[in-house]
Length: 98
Image (tube, rainbow, N blue to C red; front, side, top):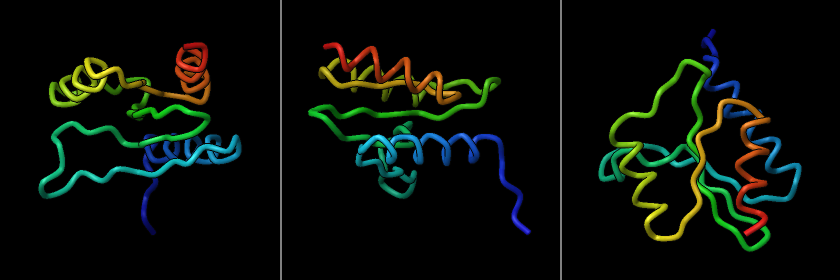
């Protein structure tokens, strides 16, 4: 039986939460030719697009993930690092008011 990691549990919670509230959310899989450090999810809804990186409480962004975040933000995009539903709510609230 496949072991489910803490990060995978958080990913499922975040995806389910976003879908419940009417967002279109899809995972971005790192693979051949993918942008290094690309976020885990792209979230679209209510006139906004977010990139969400999922981490455990102990998890840290890699240098490539920080570079991706900076690239998104420098182009006016929205990005958040999320370790829980509460983190997600804070990220969403920050951008919903803009």
